[in-house]
Length: 488
View (tube, helix red, strand yellow):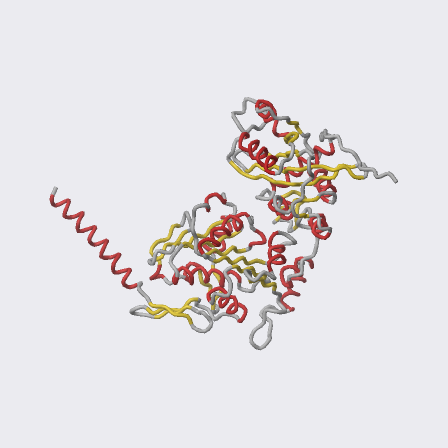
């Protein structure tokens, strides 16, 4: 027994000695040069982060962040401009000088693993893995499953996809975050974390090319004159070396053009020119018209008008509810969307209570719920009754909406109704993001877009708005509305 105890003590002592030795070797002093490159001095070596020589525009961005000019950064750079390398090095840099938690996000967890966790970049003519850009002596532990890296100074780096439940980020206290490919990501992650950074003084960088006039496009347009934000829109014409020579030439672009890359995509990816098209985004034209005609209105409500709730049912998936009022003009019902609710893993009672709270907050009467056709088979509860049955048990009025005759018919109906719809600015941002990002699936084999949608985070909001459209077309909105006629 004594010998066994001594062996265990020796093993623990050896492990502690090893840890102490690693930490001794990893002790360093650091300083910034004039360009805010990070220089570290160890007992046996010197290192610099980043490993590469930065381009002028990358150096400018590094000065903005580490020189304290701004902690809110949004940059639209063309493809092949080095967005990934520089922003990943921001994560490394910050985790070395300011121990804490740092997060690098991608549109999906799959892309996060392929692009960064397993990916590499060409550095000085050599393919270098992104993880190898972290000085090895600073790494204490890697977790391949969770895609986390612990440093010897206590920092934690987490690479993750924006398709995770944003609730998993609640309660975390990161010091900094990079949202890579933000135009292609669910913006809810960014919205979840912004209050954290306001409170703890942390920083946030969003980088991407454009993807139509979606949330990323409007983030830059709406914040470019805000002194709290540093926003840049660049193209291959503005990203040049010290002698004014472009890093990406017109011949590079023409090569893609000859290969069949659509012109709208060339303009968007290389020149930052966003053209309204529906080749990829189903509602691009209609959403653009909503902005042009100023139909996203501050504090928009119709006093004393009934409120209606339109569902997309999700139980294990996300559930979404569009809240709308209606006004009659020229013999037609014009939707006024005043609210939007989205959550997951909640029962029906939760959503009914949220709708009631919403109406009470604005002193508005509530009329009824509208459930899509699959609500006859899907239930928020035990599956013994339909959703309408459970609503009636709660004293609520509800109606089923018939299934559309085809996906194409439903899409066209939504398009037409969007030209008639106004939105409350404060309460419907998430729904507008969903409608703006709803896109077609790409056929890798045929090399073109299918006429079927991608099922992603934007689908739920669109489906709830679809329920509104189908209810209108079926004359299920029972409120009696009157045209206002002024007599001389």
